[in-house]
Amino acid sequence: MKSLLAMFALTTALTLPGLAMARPVTLTTTLNDYGGDGAYLALYVTDASGAYVGSLWMAGGKSKYYRHLSDWYRATGGDTAQVNGITGASVGAGRTLEITLDLADALFEAGYTLHIDAAVEDMRDSPNEVSVPLTSEGAGTPVRGRRYISSFAYDM
Image 1 (cartoon, one colour):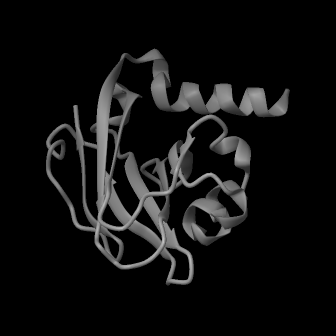
Image 2 (tube, rainbow, N blue to C red):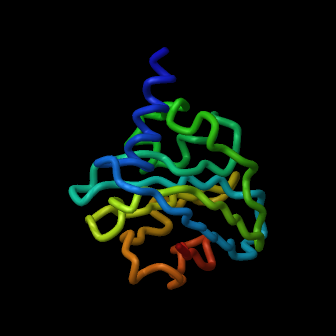
């Protein structure tokens, strides 16, 4: 019951804060050809004060590796209920992850930031690999990651 309530709270926070309208947003993450195993990626949102709001997507399904996504893990306490139902396979080097989610309009122009933590087995972890403010103006503008991500962009 607790995980059901947590999932409802997460869904409400990310898709309907303040009962706002939601819109489809496509998140496109392209990895560098770094020559290692598939990357685990945690895509999550923080508010204007830096407090964790919720998880959008987790690439990589084995929860034993989530601790390597250290900023996400610290924010959630490693709570797998945060990503229950929003996980997919890890993303291979040189590959692209493209997902479309409904995000509340209230997340844009309000100080919310989308973060991506990255980790690859037997390679260095990369917390806060990407950090972008959610703004209408930033839509469609690719940004470079720090280590594993070649580019990330969101489109509305």
